[in-house]
Image (tube, rainbow, N blue to C red; front, top):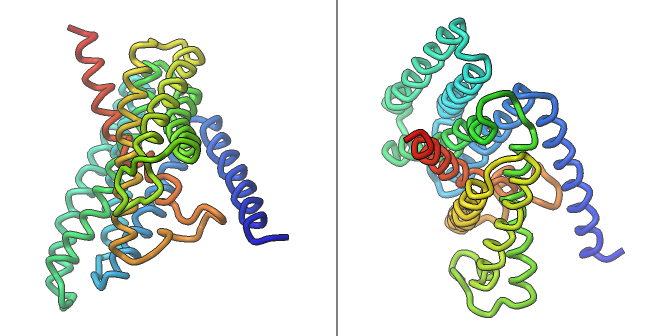
Length: 290
């Protein structure tokens, strides 16, 4: 068996297992979905810190990870509150999570004073950046499917159709890029990306947006607009992670997913599309209420 065939089989099998994990977590309920996002948060933050260490920077892994978890919990509890109709008992947990997040961010500066490292400014900046790059988007992602579902109940298909937008962009961009790609988009960071593939990715996301609106019974206009936002931000997410990896001099952010690399390699598009999708849906809700 050739190496290419072996890698293809490994990549396909691990991708199938990953898909089953995502689907299983989604259909368990909101807590299963939140647990999935928490795993992405923890794995993504640790991988980001490992990339920083490859550059000689020494981020505070433990304190940064605690800050990331606290920030994600804020988003998750906010989602639970909306589903439970604003259950008052959750107000205490939310307040504790917010206070803990603020304290952990303050602790980053305090701890660096006593670490006696050569690059304290870079250490602090990288520690905070890891939280902002991974945990903040995942905290907002905890809310996105609920916004699509109108906060009535947990609707797993809203999240799955959102993933279709991301994956549709990725798949169609690859197919069009391989067959028709001639004009490179950003060869310095991603030599294989082309403008033809970019257009194909947008069209793929639009097709998935139509499918998402049909499956969820949502507004076609809302889903098509979301498809454009997700497509554009997904490309940006892929390029940003490529920039980080190239700067660190590594091929993959990790090796936890056989054939795919690390958490950031697989979910880079989802990470950067989440805040853009949140803002889009929030503004759309404000306009609809005018």
